[in-house]
Length: 162
Image 1 (cartoon, rainbow, N blue to C red):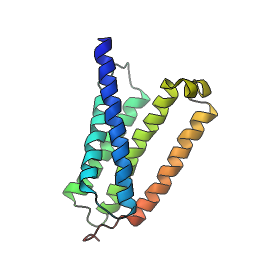
Image 2 (image 1 turned 180 degrees about the vertical axis):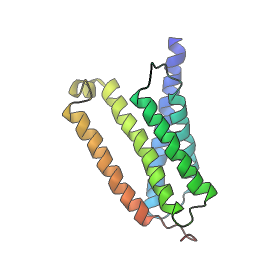
Image 3 (image 1 turned 90 degrees about the vertical axis):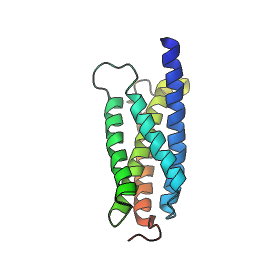
Image 4 (image 1 turned 90 degrees about the horizontal axis):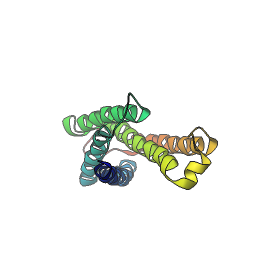
């Protein structure tokens, strides 16, 4: 069981990293008004897979990770509808940008939290994740994503859309 869980965790982390990397490329597309269809599909698929596979880890009761997973799947659903059902028309353009950035932020938020749990030097700096280094890292990530979100909403005007 432990080996299976370890393999599952590695696959989950790899999917998460692909989701984050492809998400950063999608953000570039949003900022430069490029649709980047393939990268968007990869980002959405891997981010859904990351959130969904997170529910298969053993847990007891409701945890913050479960809450983030639920919120991520909700905003990913909105992003998918905005992009594919409503074809980024009118207000769905900025709704997609906000939803995609939010889903990516959730992945980065979890990456930071997991890094402070699993990487010895970071864990030593913030063993309970309530210490200043952890709070600074999470606050910096939030501010960066808020800035990127404003830029994405302002900059994402793909050709042929209002």
